[in-house]
Length: 89
Image (cartoon, rainbow, N blue to C red):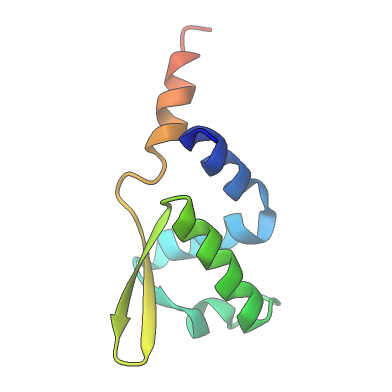
């Protein structure tokens, strides 16, 4: 699967997209912070973060027993590049 397809498929899920937007806006967040007020269980949030990480959209950093997530600098690059190809239209 191409990088752009993986990013598109990953962000197609509305819950995952919402979590990604929350990570981007917060700068860095722990699972417990992302679970709070999301209406999604902690295991489900963890699974969504795993998919975001696999797509290269977020990175994790261990801080003691807590794992913190932040958006990666180049995570959306495949999608931006793909859209750029069609900018002439």
